Image (cartoon, rainbow, N blue to C red; front, side):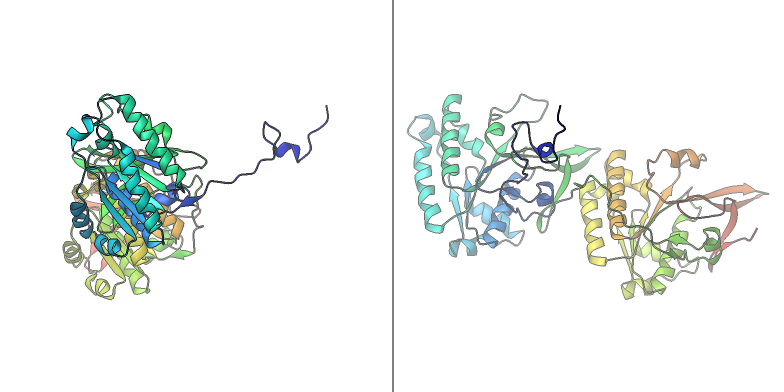
Length: 484
């Protein structure tokens, strides 16, 4: 048998050359969503956006529509459930002036709410609606359209067959005019019967499911792309939030780690600890400081933060344990004056109550702070409190994504963790952070009738370090490590 040529090896099963070319797309303008969709929505085709009440369907559709308007693509919003006046008022809360866009003939809001008696009597046909839309599309040269709550229209029909017939007619009309379409439809909870409009999933070229769930009394929103004809896409669930700027999706879509290599050593702020670490922490790496309550974790982190700020570097301190004022006051006892560093802007302290919001909102605030502050170092105090964001899995998701973002940016990341028992080693081994580069264990033990603090470096990837326990004290001059 002849050996296949190189050209033949790159042909598909039909003998045709392989040429990968994705379909034309239009950006959504939603931060993170275009990354999940590998460029945006299918141009000139239909995207189905389904989800339960309060999941963000209508807002997501409107935001995509407005982005198109801003990019020179006039759009139409067809409303089967809400009044146009209410939509304009709601949009104002996000700073979106729909009325001015309507006056400029770049946006058209069509109030298509119908009288159920007219529909059921058989006097209504979707052809009349399409005739009105056809005139409007031509008049404003519309390129995008959002049909919101189409299930409200279809539910009025008394015949499932008629529902499908009318929807197929709408779909064909949209395709014939080359409109980039988003159609929203409500879904029922998974434990109930399947939606009567499940056939829409097969009709649409792209299907996106959004939901809002409550875990441990904390509400979270998630997004998942179910299908996307002719395109690759991120296949996981992605958290998203509704902020003052609209919807923000927080994706991890890369299947490879893109971490920067560690930089040179940077001082821990304590000369003796630098000796133990053979020069200090490696810049851009991850450090875990773990110990029981009162062992000195926060003090050790603040010693590092102060030293970094005095070198002219910026530090972002994410505190889930106490307010900035309380932290500043408490650090005066070991002689750390943090307030002047905060005033210069080199030290930025952000405090949040873990259970006050879902993990996706915490993650959004953290990633936004990385972009705004542009720190060289980040401290998270403490990761044990993050479980109050909803669950252990939610905490892990938050911490891994923050850590991944720091490593991609070359930011030194220090995590503090409060151990709950005496077997600290067992707690560390179960934390699931193999990506941590350096682990420092602090313990507080009764020795010779007094409480003594000890420090040991359990791990320091790619660097020499002392493997001995070192006694240390917290004084009014900071941390004092006792020489062996």
